[in-house]
Image (cartoon, rainbow, N blue to C red; front, side):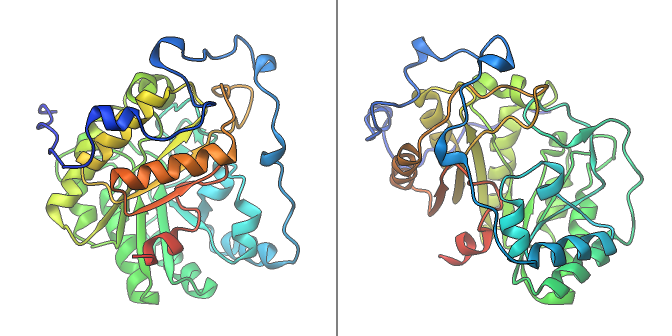
Length: 326
């Protein structure tokens, strides 16, 4: 991949202002005293009270689950063991996951299965569109597993899915894509479908990138992807998100947020990382809700037009509200 061009210089904040943003004293700490991952899962901090949720009442979640089974569709809600699954299903919404349910990247945080991938199903875009119509969705979020085995990384399948949903429902469409290994033409193909929101998650700070996202991932690709979307179609809102609690410092976090703003990122999500199994990366720290609120206010000062920040916030959580609050 060719070297990434220098980041655009946006008049947001100076480095000194960035480090003086008002955070509570229980922040992540300075770069020199980073919390280290525990040696074993047993050493991880106990789940705090604010991460314990009530189960939603009613049967709407069963309707959503049955519809997805009927149409043979995958969701990130199920495959990534999202803590918001029952809430979203009960509200007759879901984040569709295309291109199968097996990923080619061994990310240390993700519960999606890794291994031998499946053939791409040509009728999947139509089935996604049918589900969106029957759920009555006005804002449809489409993500995928990472498919490094495909020549275009699955970009054309994203393109076809966006068009199918729009034709069938007229809904706004948000895509949450992988990095496509920086392949030429992949981003252009997705942008050509003109999704209203183009999301690509940063997930963590550069120092932790390879440990969290795997050796094939590159922080520079994330920034270059978001910047390229803005160059191709400025009317598309760009979005990214990070998980907190993996050992990042306050300084590293704000360096990353400034990088995202320099790349033209409009929307930001900040949520708590939760370990899906003992085989995944351990939680280093549980960030309190009041700190998430402070981080959200600070991110807005950096220039993000919409910010969702909280322990249960995920990439597509309340995505419609974020997109429509413009």
